[in-house]
Length: 403
Image (tube, rainbow, N blue to C red; front, side):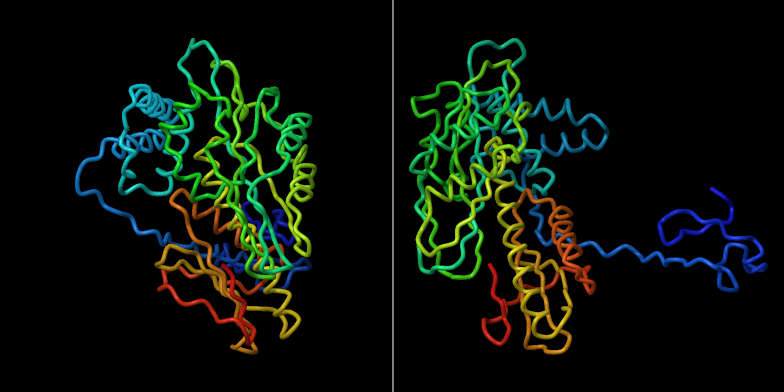
């Protein structure tokens, strides 16, 4: 790079003539206007602090200590081997019918440790030792975010009448890659119900599957529609694929959602349609159980935030113009987005994004800021301190209550 250079408007490096600089300070900007424009590099936007309160351990906890050791190994560049060792440790405990310290959630885990535990549990449940033979049932979940609007009150049934048609669409599109021997349960289960399924139960099903192939793990959870405005609801479909123990998992061979997502979305709409209710199904890729729980919760919140932003922007821009937006962490473990009119303090819209234990805060922040940027919202302030939780604005007088 030249000794005398600056960043031009296109982001390229543009040489600045030496005689255009202050002779008393060669590194300064030019003393007189140059025939080409410059941009001022703005300081990076502040980052959100994590509002989730860490819990200190008062006594040793073997699993928590092991997880911390794996994270330390990852920081030192040996994460793959250490993580594989943790998965084998969990698998051995499952084989002996023992609880590896999961009966009570390991205390003091941060979000990175929670994600590591999810990965290790999925690997322990679905993995097999090198050289192992025979067949194994790999249990998976398909997160589906449903968006409802229009008629209220209403109820969307909690089971698919013809789940075989859904499985057929996925099979023909290669949703699980080369794996064609799989089945789906028809129940649309809730996040709360899916969380009650234990790792030991899932491990047992992979080795000794029954006739239902794990389909009975979830029970139907109808969607209660209580508001006419657009709302996001999360449900899961459970399924199982039967493969050789040493064969690649469906995660390694699965096709992209784009190959089957639209067809499956349309089929779900047709099977679950309620007169007068707008219903959109947004299925995601099949995932191992514990990853699906975290990813599904994130996806629901991301869709809910999209619905909030589009609705609030439409209202504010129609009434007073461009909004002011404040993004802040709150001490109730949420990220809050407040959207107000600079001309009318009564016009105030707010949204809460509750953080799950395994949520990557930088990913949540990126999703929020990227959408605001895509919607051309210029005045965005990010608070650098955790603020006290506040009540949401009341409906009416421009207030838009979001969940």
